[in-house]
Image 1 (cartoon, one colour):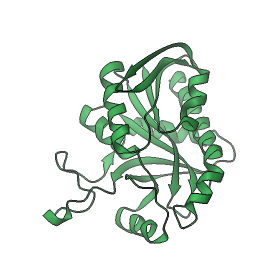
Image 2 (image 1 turned 45 degrees about the vertical axis):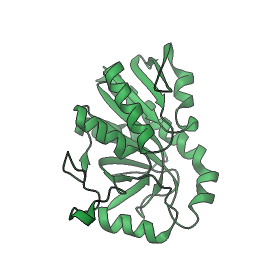
Image 3 (image 1 turned 90 degrees about the vertical axis):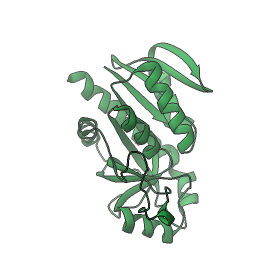
Image 4 (image 1 turned 120 degrees about the vertical axis):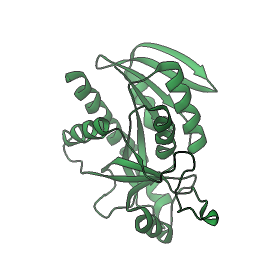
Length: 233
């Protein structure tokens, strides 16, 4: 089994790269892929860059070159659910591209033509294993639900309320649903694991800058626990 791990920013993936053994590095479409082992599990780790297009390019290349058994998107997110505080963990059971909008043609917002769905389902075993892994980390609360993605940093109470009301979303970020879209089309199980860095409200920019590194470390703790769970099974 080989697990693909994708993050957008250096802070989200660098520690994983530093921990890897038997590392081989390849560059595809300007993105570096680190293949090796962590906890005796084969992994390939990539920093995609921010946004849906970067994430999609990274995911498709990873699938074609490395044929992972599953892909996990890790990193930080804005919290939408009141139950999630800074540092807590959001795990997706479905993902939505909230900025996909062909409503002028009669489609509901978020509807993706071609696959003809709004909520893209995550791989069941992946979501379950991430949940088990997160519960092993002391001091971190976890919530599972819909995570939404779009090419915008959410930093207003009005937009936050809209995303909650329309999609019943628990967190928002900029890559997970794009990664899910590509995995869904390639029949590759995927999961999205995000630690909360801000509350996606009018103070989100200040909170993100203050807590991003701490949140990213919590995300990394869970993915390492996940890899231990995979090894045991």
